[in-house]
Length: 97
Image (cartoon, rainbow, N blue to C red; front, side, top):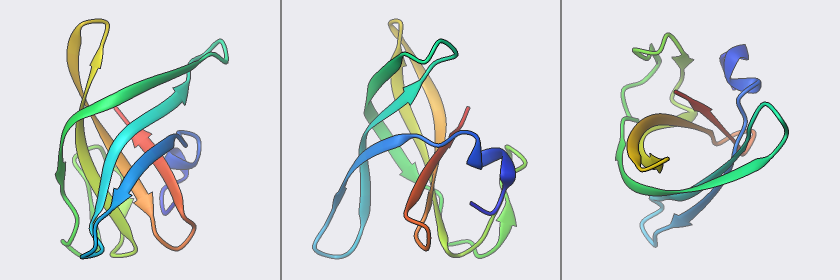
């Protein structure tokens, strides 16, 4: 990832690739502080990519080699917004809350 903070926040993501080449995030899995895995279904998302190189409102620097998704997941009965970052070159996913 371009930003070292994201390297620490890697997550597993199940995604779909459409016939048009679109990446659609469906589900993510992450480890909590105790090492326990938690899986979340993505209830909705918005692709924030295609802006060239810029810094997100989270303070993360991204380039055109990355896709940024604003996703909604349900955590303990509440909808929470997270950002997923996909690095096409390294084939890695990371999350920022």
